[in-house]
Length: 350
Ligand SMILES: NC(=O)C1=CN([C@@H]2O[C@H](COP(=O)(O)OP(=O)(O)OC[C@H]3O[C@@H](n4cnc5c(N)ncnc54)[C@H](O)[C@@H]3O)[C@@H](O)[C@H]2O)C=CC1
Ligand SMILES: O=C([O-])CC(=O)C(=O)O
Image (tube, rainbow, N blue to C red; front, side, top):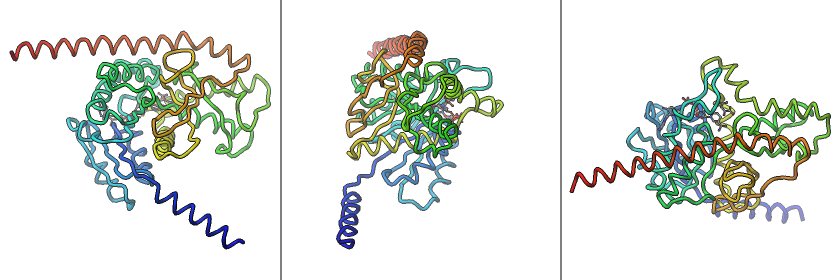
């Protein structure tokens, strides 16, 4: 009996292995504080066949270093002007490119520096791998994702099921802080975080915590505030040397792995992310999602909220909407300016 059960399990394991596909993952901004440890983690992922890395600087050194790690993942490096080659045929593109915060800055103050990254990468994706799942780490997430969506729309390449702003770090922090509070293994804590990725737009939904979280409202308020300000906690601790990198690399590697498991048609793969597919409340919103070969299989929508969470949601909406509209307005203006420039160049060539 035991032998036949073991044989069954072994057969299932072998079947799963033989069905497993290997995917091409591209990392844009791979020389950076997040990009390097993220690439290290992806180099160890059995669902990755090819890891294609790009940056504006130092990418050949990162490639030489990674290539000595004895896993079967093939790594290829691309310099600044080679973004299209890096992305060609990618299944997943993850983007930790862009400037991080310094103490005293808000994420929104990164807008001017990083908005162009969203346009550039989304444009290259529309040309080189329009079927890829595109996931941004770049801040401010609340504006960067709407910018990318507008650019993809302008290229007729927008599928809202395939565009994501990565908010996994908020979920990871929520599990960690609640695990500490309850003296539990944080891996056993499942707590959805919805909304956006800046200050009060980050809303952990304690009423849906698993295991259920019974405590004073004051504790919930304190933990909510800590999760909302955790990025700033790291920025202050790093004292000018950047923002979260290692925990973000961990979170992005987890999110990419979930995207790959979805592409591999594993059932019931779930993550929260900031998306524009069937989003509640606003055109873009972070909610729990079911992932599949299509990217988002299903948006699970707003979880049930208690009074405190409903009030917090209402308070965040104007700020989140403003950030979304800021991204959309920037994209429309810049895409129109570029179209005009291209039209002008064509006229001159006549
Ligand atoms: N979504 C989230 O939860 C989090 C987001 N972030 C954001 O991630 C971004 C990256 O942070 P770090 O890695 O610490 O910064 P970093 O400065 O260490 O690295 C950024 C890298 O991007 C590269 N880069 C810039 N523009 C590029 C372009 N157009 N194409 C290719 N590469 C480009 C730079 O050369 C650099 O190597 C920041 O915007 C930061 O705010 C950081 C932590 C958490
Ligand atoms: O706080 C920052 O600037 C980086 C970030 O988004 C985070 O750590 O959540």
